[in-house]
Structures are given as structure tokens and as C-alpha cells.
Image 1 (tube, one colour):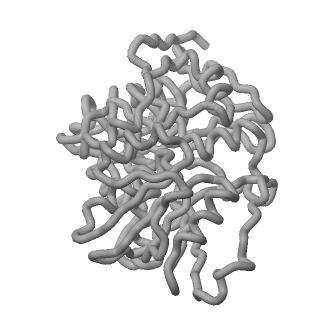
Image 2 (image 1 turned 120 degrees about the vertical axis):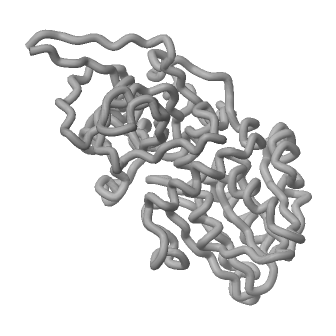
Length: 334
């Protein structure tokens, strides 16, 4: 009997990763065999897993949909995978799909685990869908309105996606805030204003925080207007955040609200499933403005070194896309 062999990235906290051989399971009648074309590293979550900075209380909740292994041990983690269906029922073969699957050259999943790419969404950009889904949920949680003055603190991938979506709000005034002046080019491509924290506008109607730093969160609090809402998108892992609640937080009756993609926002959960939300996120990836978020592509086999680089706070990569075009899988007889 011939077994099909793929290759996958495994994270071994703290701060080690390697590429391992994977024996693919025999597909069932409703399964798809998918060959990966691109994946992307979700820098916020995957580097926390890589560094061993996930709190023990969150090991279960932090599981990726197709994660193998269990923290604090080695795990196959990740959730931004775009591939082409090699085998499957009906008209599935040949279709490009997105799946919340880790970094692996080929894999087998049920067909209801994938979402086909809309014709106008290029596969190279579709890897943003997982982060875009988080951004969609954030806007549902915050519910910005026509004419709102909106600030996003933290011009990483998630913050930039949120700012880009808010840019389409009629009459809106959107500022993207970051300590890195180079992120001004990102803001310009997205059609929003850029500013450093010290020159950011105050009295804002809605503030999103996505910098994963105490300084960034306190900046977000300082920019909110009376009775405004600050939506927290960062996940700090085991790192404590120092929050300045001794200033105007109480007198201005501010609201600090958590947003997280694991559940559909209560504002939409009665009508929206996870799958429908992901399909919307994929459709929003048709916007070519978001190409500004991609760094130079990296090859799949270089992923262990890529993870080490991305875990370095000095690295300024936004979205790291992984290319699988030159990889050849193998088979073995068992």
C-alpha cells in the first residue's frame, strides 16, 4: 500500500520550529485532497505560540481549527491556507479554496471545511482572509456609524485591515496611528490619514487598539472622546498590560471592550455563521489596496527561520506570505 507523504511546519515552544513529514489520511467520499499554493503567518498569534507565551488557561481556547499536538508541547498551528483541490467529489477538483489549515504542503479535509475563492480574489491575496475575518468581527463589535471619527492604534496587519474597512464609511474621518513613521505608506495606500501617537487627534468616537503594547492601549484610551468606546483587538498572551485608568477614564465614562474572532459578534450571531463570515472576509480580499501589507514572499522550507525572524520585536514585517510552488511531495510503500 502506498502512503502519500506531505510536509508540515511544527512549532516547538519555546522558540524552535521544524518541518516534518506527514502521512496523509485516506480521504473519505466527502473529503478533499488539497495542494497548498500559499499560506501566511499570523504574526500576533503564531509568534506567541512559537515563543511559548500562551497562558496555560488558554491552551484549549487557542487551538487552531486543524491543530495537531497540544500546548505546551509541539503543535502544528496556523490558519491561513490557500490551495487547489486535487481530488474530491463532483466539480471540486481544480477549484481554488481557502481553509483554516496550518502550514502544510498537502492535506485532506471535509469539503465543508473550505470556502471557494470568489473569481475576483487572487489566490496570493486570499491568505489575508483569516485576518480579514477578525477585522470584520471587530467592526461588528464596534458598530462605527456614518460620520464617525475613528482611530486605529497599531498599523500591523489587523489594524491596517480595520482602518481600510473603516475608510469606506461615508463621512468618516479615519486615522491610523503607529510609532513607525514608515507605516505612513501603508495608510496612504489604504486611503486613511497617518499620524504618530504624539500628534494623533483626540475626542474620537471609536478607537480600535491593535498594537499589543501597554503604551498603545494607553494612547487609545487618551484619544477617546466622552462616552466613547475603545475596542481591544490585541492579544497579549502571558505579557501583562499596564492600563492607565486613573486619568479621565471614569470621568469621561469610557468603555473598554474586547473583540475576538473565536465567536461571531453578538450583533450578528443570530443570522451569521462562521462560514458565512469567512466567505464575506474572502470577498473583501478582492480589494487590491491590501497588497501593501505583504512583505517579500518566503519559501515553505524556510519557515523555521522565518518564525525566528518574525518573533524578533525588531522585525517590521507585516504579512509574511509563504509560497509552495517549488515543493514536491513524495510517497512511500507501507
